[in-house]
Length: 349
Image 1 (cartoon, rainbow, N blue to C red):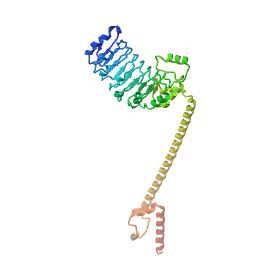
Image 2 (image 1 turned 45 degrees about the vertical axis):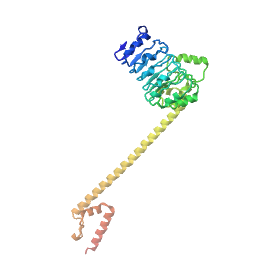
Image 3 (image 1 turned 45 degrees about the horizontal axis):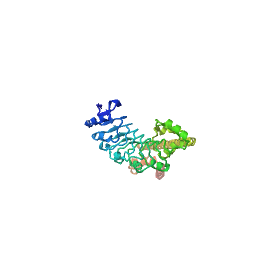
Image 4 (image 1 turned 180 degrees about the horizontal axis):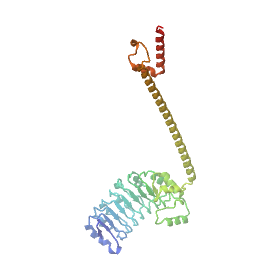
């Protein structure tokens, strides 16, 4: 059934068969095809999609697929969801699709990381949960140069080399959300029976009991401190879990740091108040001196106007402002007083 939004989805398996896929070739305008749970014959999957050049999203979950040959013709694909199939190799297809953004290949039999170099600038999500990946190969190392890769899921893969894994994780600077549960290289050594119990509890769920893996979480966070979530659990929620047995030490350090910051803040406030007090006193002193100077200027002006200085006209100072200036300073007043006293002594009695 072709839906109004140029999409095709199978609602009931009984209403649609593999042979009916050939009829879809006339609908080249389709952008999304969902054929989940449709059993496909071996080697015939790719030929049904050669004519869909506008296809952006392909969802084929639980279709018993073992090969994707022929799908490389769909160059416009951006979403590829092929969970719960029997795929072993997909690199021949993924290496030729330049616009892939979301690749979901969970629960297959893929032994190595797929080649995705063609979609280096567009890939944002890669999910490879529950496959047969053993080593960190060149295709995996190439993911470190993918600038938009944000979500990565490689959980429940038999990777055993911890050193190589951690070295590779430290290079994934763009990844913010990662899933690493069930990897032997990271999880603690436990009895086989206990491992089976944990696996059963985690089956069908993306969340992990971090209290059972204390070193797992702390090791990942030390290697990738920029992460926002681990196995769909926000890093902020992990702060309340004692991952490495040093929670009390971290709390003590945090309290000491807060006290130090508080003390430093109080010292800054006191210093600021002290500086402000000095500035206030300086302004008060400047205002007092200004008022005193203005008062002396007024007094000197009044004395000049009332003829307080009784000297001969030829000896009167031509510039009254000079007199004002002399009267406004202590040294000037002293000089003026001495000069006036000498003039009085020269007068005949």
